[in-house]
Structures are given as structure tokens and as C-alpha cells.
Length: 357
Image (cartoon, rainbow, N blue to C red; front, top):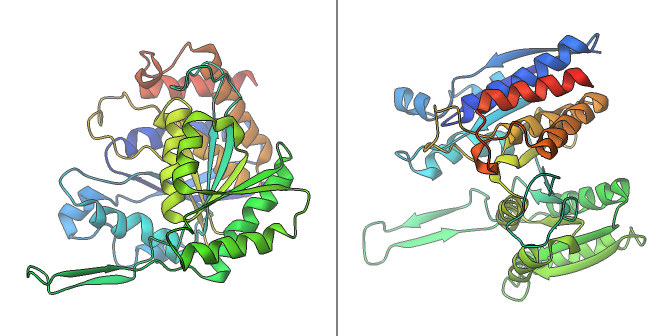
């Protein structure tokens, strides 16, 4: 097994706390798996760095990250710095520069976790959401004219390329074939109102779907998809959506499966030319930062996604099993799930379960 070089950006708020637990899990796996090892390069980038330098990361930051096998990311955001500064200064440049076009966000209701939707049982919600991650509605195209005047005009342009759209849709179908559960792909659109971008999206979806006749397909308007996700989440299998729609739907999915503290995300460079990035979805959570209260399971699940991407499938499965067992047993869980355990105690519990095999 190789030694994996990991870039670690703990970032803001609870990021350093949950990332420390992610590294704890990796170290535990390395200690019990002959030949498996990790080296870390920690980068102090984020809002604190911005206050010191005026930048979220240095000008050569992307070059510093490029040689690594993967990036483990904590959180970004600060209540005293505009979100567009923190996001566009750190997270989005990495996604774009490293062509992390495929965002994968599992949405699963674990045993031991209660959904806010009454009557949903463990395993009944089991969705994998594919989000286009580098273009679409979040493309950095637009501008402001005549600021501060009565004629002020703002333009924000979505960018949908055939390459990018087909790539994310095909990735969803390929995953659905491998997953082999409900064998269904749902496309999320808004072609009744967005007559160019979403009509194009629908056309590409139909073209790709024709290559997978064994897969059931449906196309839902985004408002309908949001409604169905909170009333009939069990109807979904694999979902594919644009950057904006996927962002919204994946956060709804995190809530309906019990907690944002369980939601992990993979930002995949499909050609493996650049490092992919793995993170929790919950954000910086400054209200509990530094208090050892944050749920680290999202970051630990992101570690499992990273191990799977690196080809360390047995190790990934070990982590997934330990997370599932800890939730089912409910002996050591954080406050967001109704428990009293600390961030570090949850990490220690996962290490203990890994040791038991």
C-alpha cells in the first residue's frame, strides 16, 4: 500500500475540532493496517488567515495543494466576513482549479437516528445525490453596473457546458448501475421557467438516459423535488442536479436524515489529475466552536468517502460500519442527536469500534 499525502485545511469555526477527529480515525486505521500510512500537510487558511493577510489563502495556495493525493477540509465561514468573500476565496477556487466536477452527497437514515419526518424507519431513506460542482448557476460570470446609483444593475449568468452537464449526468447513471438498488435516476430541473439552461439540461439527460435502458428515469421540477424529498424521500434512489439545485437538495436531505452533523460530501476530480476534496456539509457553526460539542461523524464519513476514492475500500467499509454501529448503539452521541458526548469522545468511540473490527 502506498503512503498517502493529504492536505488538511481545518478552516473556520468547528472545522479544526472535527478535522482532528478525522485525522484520529486515519491514524487508527494506519496503526492496525500493515502498509497503510498517511502524511499530513496542515494549511492554516481560512478566516483567521484572511484577517491577517486580506486573503483566504495565499496566491500560490493551489500550487501548494496540487501534489497531494487528497484534501481533507473542515469548514469555511465567519459571521464577521461576508460569505461571498470566504466561499469565493477558498472553497470554490479549489473546486474549479482542480476540476472537482462531481459532488457526491449520500443521504441515509441510520438505525438509531430519528428523522423529523414521522414514520420513516432506518434504511428507508437511502439516496445518493450527484451535484454538478464547477459551473452552472455558481459560475463566476456577471457583474455590477452603476453601483450606488438608481440605475444600479446586477448580472449573474449561469454557465452550462455540454461537457460538464453530460459528465455529471453520466456519473449519476454509472453510479446507479453499480449501486444496483432501485435502479432509478431522478433529474432535477426547472425547464418550465429557465428556457435555455434547463431545457438544455433536460435534453442532455434524455440523451444519456437512452444509453441506460435498464435504469428507470424521472425528471422533476426543483420545487416538486423539494416537496417530495420531505414527504416521500423513500421514492428516490440516485438524484442528479445542477450546482444550485444540488446544493439546496443535499442540505434538505441532511436534515430529513436526522442532522447536518452526519452529512458528508466528496468533491471528485473524475480524471484523478488533481486532488479531490472531502468535507462535512454542516459549515463553521461558530455558536458551538471551541466548546467540543460538534458532531464529528460527518467529517469521519467524509474520511470514508476519501478512502473509497483512494482505492482503500476495506478501510472505507470499516469506517462506515463503525459509524453505523455507534449511531445504532447510541452510547456515545453528540447533542444534535440527543446525546451528551463531546466531539473527542465520539472520535474515541469510533477508534474503539475500529479496534474491535
